[in-house]
Length: 255
Length: 382
Image 1 (spheres, rainbow over the protein chains, first blue to last red):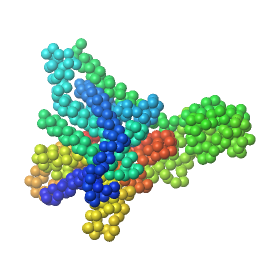
Image 2: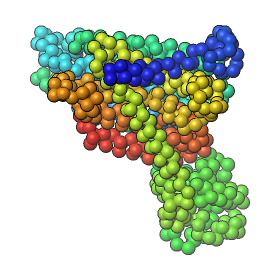
Image 3: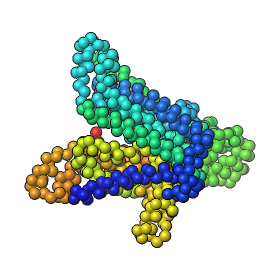
Image 4: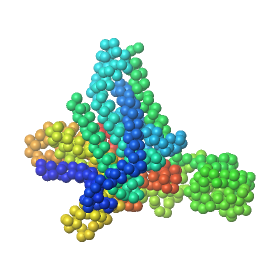
């Protein structure tokens, strides 16, 4: 029974992890044919990736947009979570979580219509705003989770020692929420970095992100260059998941 | 000022920035999207004066001669503009042939419509224009559930279901993916829940790696894995399951396999959370009463994890129902789901009313599923 369960668990884990690695050998292929395993190896496709202006722009855009989304969603999400921690309002929380609940295609369509109406369509700024809105719920949830179990009396105690509420919040409560803020930031970066639906609707070719450019590459003419891009994106995702796991560990240890 | 009041003000000030951002940049766009599903401004934009007269007409027989002449006059003036293009597309959506009729009438330079085309002597095109002059229309929403509205206002079932088929396909694929995720995720979640905490964290973190990995990377991976010369076909050949390589990419099977791979972490997380909450003494008590391991799984762990199973199933189902990228890249034409159809109306035919109506349908599906979860497992659906 125990061995059967262990084998089943290992098999499911293999199904989860092994397919991810498939993109790596294809990106190192020596030929243009997508074969696994490839007939020969070369770094040709990474050179192609690094010298193609479309992929360079896409890489730059991905990092700009993700950084912008983090810069906007983390402070706003953290502030909102602190506010909800002070005084929980379920209806407001439900509204904050709405971008997380609504299917990506609907959110993308709604933002596409709205941005087109106010001239924010086809702009990096629009993409950043959209990603910030989609990422904010994750920041709120992460920060709220790290504040769970922290007694609001702590704030009163700080105030009774002569701190005004805002500085007390800043100096006493915010440091306690740091793991949640970190996790929220990683989440926000990942949401933006992986997002493709909004980019499909509102990004013009000059604003393509890596995932949007990969979509175009997979749909039109597949070359191993797309897999070089996929490998690079995979590496970024692995770093993010490692960061998230670490933030989670810190959070659990403190409890 | 007492503490309570000061904290309340502080809380409001902290919440206000994000609340206004979400209101302006998400709730309002969502409301706009819902409005788009019934939006009917094409005629008023292109022919503002005719719109007023058409609204005044009672819809019996033909509109007054003055109205007819004004329509022809305004059509001639609007011809070639953006608004005119949108109007012809919109009118053709109501009644095929309207586009050609309007173009022909506009080209005639304001002559009496009846002299330009015989169809203007019948009520149908006039009734279509009258319907287009109304502020809102049920046409798109009706079409989204395969009903159609004839010019005289009667509502009939379409001869061939189109969108209900796509809805059914979306439900079918999402339910299958959700069931497979729960079935595959349960053993792994159970295994993790029984590990010592430190190792459980490592296993959970590993199981979450696909969750952090871009959908595009995973779809690219499945494209090569399932290729005709790919490793999956190689394995099937070696095992003797098939005699020649089989077509896997661009099939329903490929879509389901790739989607299960993407959604499995969600199911594992939900089931693991429920299992981790289970009182370990329950299982020990069952064992002391003589229950064998399989019996303990069946009578203790499985029932205890039911809220997690429900939450996992609904989460996977809801997210799957909105999938676009995977079916678009790895599925065939008969595997496209609601999101694919929505994107088709946005990018190919530029029919925003239909795109918005299908989005409303999908949104309704999501909220019904979430409400069902709230009924099934209130403790997880808070």
